[in-house]
Length: 125
Image (tube, rainbow, N blue to C red; front, side):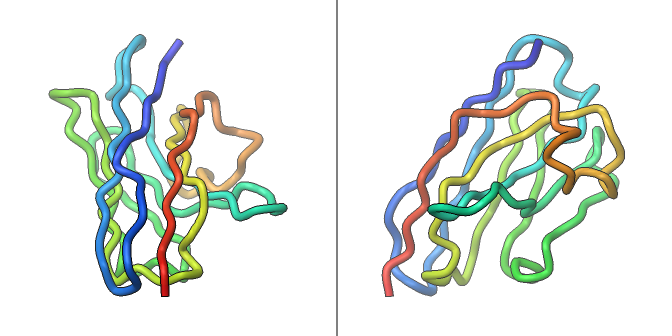
């Protein structure tokens, strides 16, 4: 079992930045690829970014490329999502996710093994 707890969400103006954190506990964090999804009201949860077990590989959804950066620190069992140049359309609940599967498959919600509880990000115009 892996428990994931997100933090760092909040309200920010357009063009601003936020850094989300995902603290893991339980099974060996470095055994899992980690990623972020987001969910807009009334929509399915969608893939945002993923990072491989030791950080060698990353993958991003097209609309966040160049603005968001995913990283991880296995020494403290924490993953991050640095979000810059935020736009109102980034407003959503952001979820941390973990799974033992390749980064290239991380977009498939059905393959995710563990989810955090979510953190709200609101970007005002």
